[in-house]
Amino acid sequence: MNFKVQTIRKAKNLNRKIFFGLTLVAALGACKSMKSGDSSAPKNPEAKLGWELGSQAYTFRLFTFAQAVKKIDSCNLRYVEAFPGQKIGGGIEGTMGPDMDPAKRKAVLELLKANNVKVVAFGVTGAGNEADWIKLFEFCKDMGIHTITSEPNEKDIPLLSRLADKYQINVAIHNHPNPSHYWNPDIVLNAIKGQSKRIGACADIGHWVRSGLDPVECLKKLDGHVLHSHMKDLHEKGKNGHDVHWGEGVSDIPGVIAELKRQNFKGAISAEYEYNWEANSADVAASVINFRKLVAATK
Image (cartoon, rainbow, N blue to C red; front, side, top):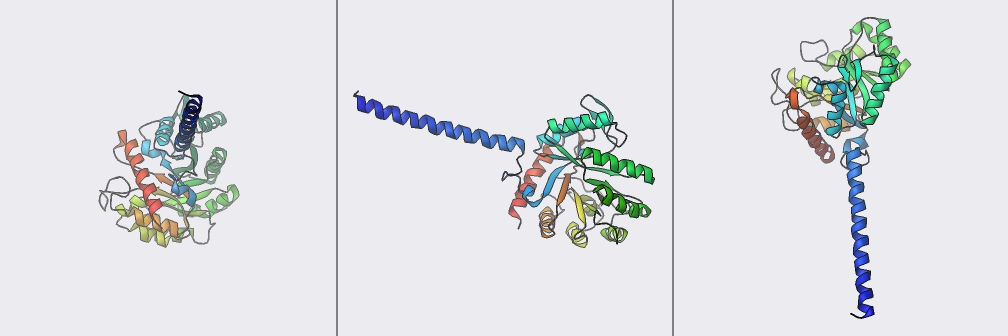
């Protein structure tokens, strides 16, 4: 083999190595972006809309909060809505809530950071007097929580309006099914009339369907007042409906997404999958994949 041929072959081999090296770097970079849940990645189209897609920890109520956070991470979600009374776990004694001392609050925040999950909401919860409401707001402030989901007594709403403005924390009124007090959006609208813009609705899609209501029409009634949502899709209308993967049931998830987009909704959306309790992580993960496809496809 002459010198010229050897030189050409060496150059070709070097080019191949450089090409495969660059390809490997690009692939590793893409995997890292997917694993970290980078909000700029195309796989998270809801992030561009200002939607914080996460899970209500109650979805994993059979487990500790620490276990719930790991499950949420495994579903490629970065946000959690904590609920009161769940055992903390992860080597931290006690339960989630305003009675956590400063050391436990710090430990929980460190736990969340280690799993790349942020707590953005707390509920469904409430308080019986002004002192306890203040204690709840103080807790949420310490934890960096921006929304309290609640079904408060209507007489407390003027107080909550003042506290919401003072602490810059939203209060989103949740709707359990009929005959709970706030089952109909008309009741919510009447209750929040004349109050702070930080007092609004936590739109529980599935509970509206259980109450015989159309979730898209309910959202339209609450236009401008939706601060948070519990996302559910049910296998049938009525009180016996149970959760199914989003977009595969009767809750008109495409219509819900389109309406939230139309309203320019900004806020957190919590997966609340209340079925197959012992092993529903895969159900949440499948729902999230469906949801993101629908978000990307819906104008």
